[in-house]
Amino acid sequence: MSLIKYLLDEHIPHRLRKGLKQRIPDLVVRRIGDVDAPPIGTLDPDILRWCETSGFLLITNNRASIPVHLQEHSTYSWDFLIK
Image 1 (cartoon, rainbow, N blue to C red):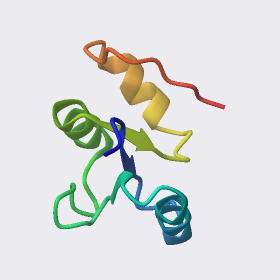
Image 2: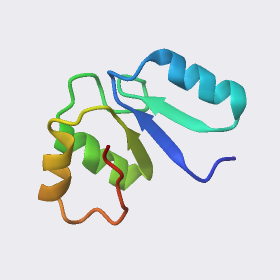
Image 3: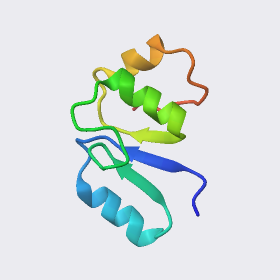
């Protein structure tokens, strides 16, 4: 089983999860809107809190608001690469 769990933002294409699971079948990949993930439309700060409490890394292409929310929440203990 994978030690790292990933949460895909709702705007990330479904084919990314499919490709990841084909390469690494036991990889834990959830997507916003999945039954066991935050629902579609969840606010960014709530998604970040969910990731922190659930042990998931967020995969997103949201360069507009996520960096702002990350700076506002200094409790996050991991490093982020924002390109």
